[in-house]
Length: 368
Ligand code: OSB
Ligand code: MG
Image (cartoon, rainbow, N blue to C red; front, side, top):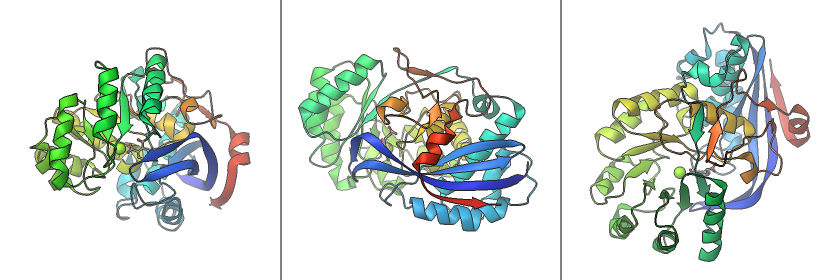
């Protein structure tokens, strides 16, 4: 394939309700979309970089700069065998995986369309349906948290993840366990604790959580290994894992028993698939994380989740939990049983709504 042209654009989408984590609260998403013309098709990718460098160092601005000034010059006018080669081509640029993923995933979509097959199939996915969970932000009160969990369970979601931070941890977990003794429940700390907090985190063992996600430093695999020896709850790493080698290191040193794979953090489908394969070899289950994506990123998450070792419910949930109107047609929908059907139409299998995307666009740059 040859990449003829890419269009970078920033759209603004307001969340239906604010989302709060240990690193902050947000109600507007600024989303960088990449539209790529290659192999006679137009592929779409979404950059999961945030508005602030609090989850990772990447932001919408750094991703735009890296895409325009460093990634585009690598792919421009080059004959590329397939989208599967793009991750290695981009390797001279260190890090900036969210910027890379936005371009790489757009090229996978274009290639799948040009071959007339679903992206999930092109990736080697075997699942026809994927199991879904929800990620619930920090709520103003315990009563509101319990009510929200009740609603999500009634909708069919198969597991509940809540956000915790110091001063907001034992209490919400205990309240939910008392009310829902049987559900699959987990907590995500987004790096809000330190190894010295081990005695506090140990107290969470009593509530038999499925896992505790990323309690310690965003780049600190070693301390997670020390913590895992002191707590019974399985640790799931998110922020720490950027490639298959780090996944292998974390597993071998005992830093986690589960890994959350995000396309942005992994640099795209090839990186995510390699991470998935390392985990499968080591019998470590994985699930697909979310970054409050619009329908484009969500569709890529659905395709990736069709790989065999995505055996745990992920954070990929229905469009209507986030947006009053998504930018794809149809929207991502979740069944009463809490699953999403993997589409069989070519490419990502959901059609971008071009008019709506145009009307939401604040800033655009065409590179040819
Ligand atoms: O840690 O998984 C996370 C959202 C933004 C940044 C980091 C995270 C999250 C979520 C939301 O948990 C997942 C989603 O519903 O998209
Ligand atoms: Mg997380």
